[in-house]
Length: 302
Length: 277
Image (cartoon, each protein chain N blue to C red):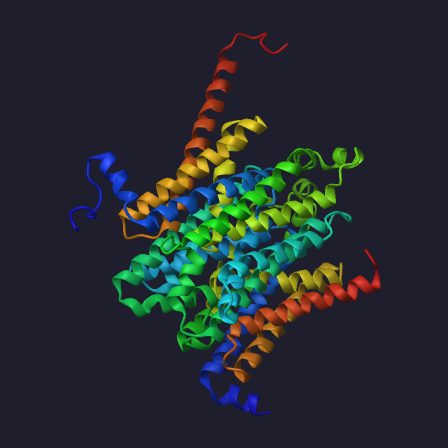
């Protein structure tokens, strides 16, 4: 037994087969795949709409949701979704456009919601008592012990969220790129924005069951930002986001399986490396194209 | 009245009240500018950096305070440098701090596996604060540091206000906008490190955002708003400590944040009645 589970060898096929030897790993890969697709799709819109802060807050509130649900003795999954959707509605109810001071007061409200939600989480944990290892799992995730029924719930919610996103994708894209023109053309910008936040809350609740509440944000923001650096064409960068998300999650799960370190660390680090590579190659391309422009004889710019 | 007798007689309560007040004053003051300059997300990022810094120090076997202050100040200055070439954008900040938090998880796992099982406690303490656990030395350091932050902020308040509200005009009038921005973020970093010990890395954002948000709702006059923000922060902290002292199952961080959030809600309700938006 030891021989078959003793870690990496040079035989890649055997390594991959070993990865799927146990049903908990198979479940982890299923859940990770679902989560990567949902996070990529909603993260792409989040980065486009520059709502990183709202996304981070929605991700974090899943922690008090789960802690509260465990305290009340109901399923943690219910807690994740209920609280994330509730927080999305609170953030959506903040008026976005009255004069110039709204942006700063909006961020103050989001920050307060986030800190208060975390404080509630701390309270629930303290009321529940003796719950420390569970606490780090809630915050930083654990890919062990994902049950088949959990995978089914993840799949169902993911399907619903993606279907809803597909329905509103076109007007949402319009409203995100140019809200004023969209509003003038009769697109319900405000409603779309609330709907989007609710969907983002669902996605955050899904992802936090794998990566933990604190690291959801990495999966939401990193693949999308990387893809939007690589290409400016919307459809191409959308699919690229999902592809990068899948690669990040699969690699991270494999790395976590073969090492003693937590999966959250690998998710964030692989995502960060991908972003760093994209940023570096873009900077290089910009520099070389500038040099080409400079090298051209005068008259290139009339 | 017995509460006040207890504050005088119990050293841990005394430390919590005095050091807590200094930390809260620094948070309220820097929070006012954080909200004014729309840098709440930067404050959020610093709170996560605080977690990683503290755990890196613990994993390396060094003093927690060194990692805490070091990481916060270095990252704050790095963000100021990024911001010099156009403002560092939310997405970039988000990516950087998500990764830093991932590193924090790594340090947490190294620390807990290397030093026995029960050490998960210190990770939790960094996240949620241990204001009642401050030692005399820590309380003195924190009070001194927080007082210095307050003094620096009050000294640069006037030009910083100018630079925050109208950067272009301030630049034209030869206000050193970039230097002010860097000094300010450094102060926020120090505040974040100090506040991590009071309310914890995860909750210090509330101490930065809620009192300042409430003060800006209530008054548009900058200096009055600043003092109001300080007063709200200190009062929230004291009230939170009293609640936690009266009901031991409630963690002090929750008490503090609950009062601060309540203040903000009350401010919103008051202004909503005064002039419907």
